[in-house]
Image (cartoon, rainbow over all chains, first blue to last red; front, top):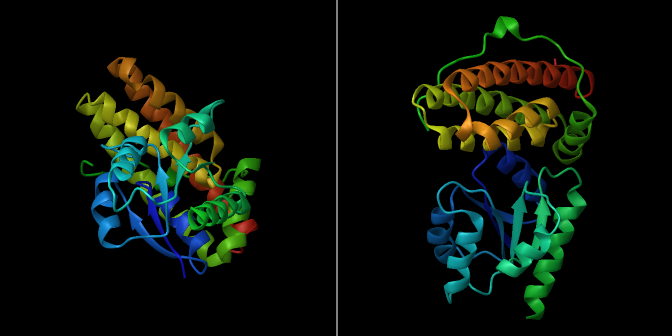
Length: 125
Length: 135
């Protein structure tokens, strides 16, 4: 079973993401970017779901650290954000994310589709 | 996060009609995990929203505007997750405006937030009872 790291500080959002993905993927949870960067090297996942609005080190900064780390830079990373504004997708893709999914999640097929595409893309790389 | 205190009087909680956004959000929850997950989601929302209200009161008392804005952002995310639209909107406004408001305005916003949290609880209880079969 492929493994997904969920980096999300909000326990309400984490509960739903975990419920949605468990059974399909093996999931590991992190509450902060710093915690994730420490944990990802020890417990390398197949993909990372990364919230943008994390306290302290936000998602974009966390991604920059991840992409600068040779052990982690290859990982597909999907941005999770409530910042749904025109141009956001392009902004986050330009920042190095593989895809972008808006919260709240009301249609599970959007998140599951993004994960499948990102995993296929990572496999093809 | 500072030590939260109970700031919602249970006796003021009253049933509300769940908004369309709540039906949409919680239909997903039921699809994924049925009544068990619905019960967990509603229970966790009650816990986190009450903790955040306590922390918001503490942030206003300590004049910690950035912390208040962060708490409002978190409340917004949780409210959106359960489709509590009115609470989401109030939280989004406070997130944007917390830094520039005076102390009296901040207290008034927290009073409104408290009412909206209470309403959201009532809406969730009603949804759980009517749509989720939660006694």
